[in-house]
Length: 314
Image 1: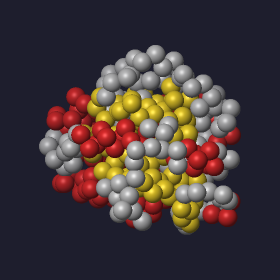
Image 2 (image 1 turned 45 degrees about the vertical axis):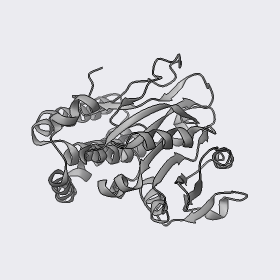
Image 3 (image 1 turned 180 degrees about the vertical axis):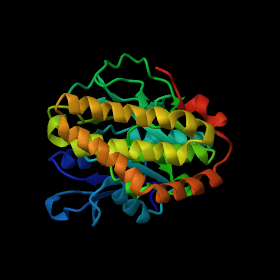
Image 4 (image 1 turned 60 degrees about the horizontal axis):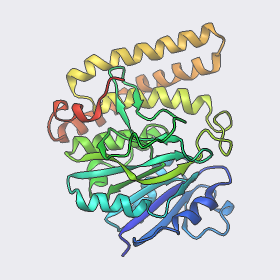
């Protein structure tokens, strides 16, 4: 049995073969590799096991991939990532030597400008939005080369204990894409496990580069509809009562203000997507509250126990 099951989702683009080759250059680890896709006929010459999924969104695809695994560790990558040969080893080593840690995120660097950041972990803010401590494209000068607790990072490069994954309840498939890893990480914290940034593990991500430009791949639906819907849902599900009452109104007010500003500047498509995201939450509030009840009843400790680790005021 492999120590690690490596799972990626293929959606679109022509970078997946580079990802596949990079994974199989990994050293010092025993692993199996899956690529889950709704377009299996497109993936020719792939060394990973190709798994067909009827779900087109990453959350469902990743859950399907994990269901095929019997490994102690699950690594998630995006299909537009080049994985360093030591990345799997470094993430597994950290989990092996830190039994209180349930999930780790690697350092993500820009695929086009390899000395610049894509992601180095994020924290919750008083607005309900996330603060990414390594702003995109800032130069990597070693300023984040230390392991540290974070709320989450990007599922473009992370590893979780399979036990913690199932204990937290897997990915919430209603999220589809955007914020689904933050939701999972938060629930892992609520189950009493830490989530850490591990800079000795790294990979290169094509997000917002010439290889995968933002305007071509990141639509209004993904950014504004999914963003509004998923962020509000994230807060409702995971915050304790006092923090929910304090943070959620501010968060909704900001989305409302953003929508109004977009109407005034004639960005009507984006404004409409924000309003649709809010309407989704209202229509599905009963379901979201049922999820909240289950999460809050099963949590270990209060917000006070974890807020010092997962929240920041930039």
